[in-house]
Image (cartoon, rainbow, N blue to C red; front, side):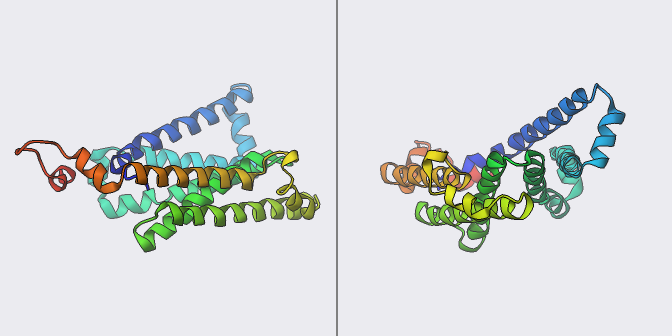
Length: 227
């Protein structure tokens, strides 16, 4: 939406940052277990939410270990893409880990899950349309916010015994605090609004002209991208 093609170049750094955070998270858990890898391993085996968290870390390590150019060339694009598609499963495992360990107060976990729903639906829509503008993204956000609210109601109603109708009603009572669905709606619509304003102030065609180097010997955008 913001026409920032170079943002894709940051994927590797973002992925490695996520790996670093996950390993740090696991390391702090070992510290919490008295620096005992045996105790930490036992807890991981016995507690389901720790098990799925450990699986997510293991998959992240596999992705991090294959994120170097030499490894990518050796694996080939097809196998490398197939392996790195597991990032979607990793994200789901991470949210599940967060939800289960949060027990009764799953506000933050549900909010993160809602933001993940936004990204997933965005990817699906982009796959079929090859373009998601601010208006369409706003629609994606509304759908995601509704699904987030329904997910929160289902979690409390099915797994905690809390009256799901009270949870649903809380979404319409701002005095009780901002609900996860509302946070998802605010974040997504803010992003859509920012993209719409940018397109008005700095249209894509104008942006392309501004980024094109001046001078007769300047490379074309196509040759720059190809390089």
